[in-house]
Image (cartoon, helix red, strand yellow):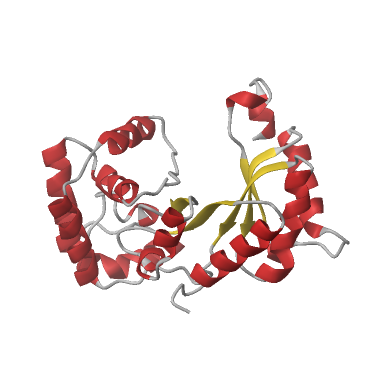
Length: 252
């Protein structure tokens, strides 16, 4: 990535990377050390948005970001895979040091709405914190290409995890296909538009160029209140749990 960005003026792109507690070294300042490695690999002297990735120890790791911001090495701070209580505490710690919590990054989709039902999404809206959902398409299960009759192929983790859920998703997927036809967009755009209209900024895993155009369609698409509620109702009826084994339960 660093080599890819070399030809561009630094002010022309917004760069995000993360500190991961489970990969921390045993030095005096593991956060600083990991950041230094990222800066070197990315050929830059600052990161626009630096995340604490996973909530292993909010009290230990959050304060370590404050001096990095004050030195100009980090412009904005975010936390990922934190529940409401942990986000609130991280915000308190940062605010006490004169730094704002800028962003939260959590798993959030039509099929997985714990960040909404626990009040975390509302807290972010109320405090000017940008919410970045990942797994918006649930690894492609909400892209409209797979159903009970057309499961994921192979013996990979995605197939093992999602194929058993497909029979329960028939009605939701049928509704998404119907709405996509009505709005003249891809089925995946329905899932993406839904999270956008929830006031979030989704992280899109673009692997092919034409997906960029699809994402632009999702940004300009406005689902009606009735369409939003219909999607949510069918998602609830599906009653599937797409929380990954490494994700904490946001209800706890």
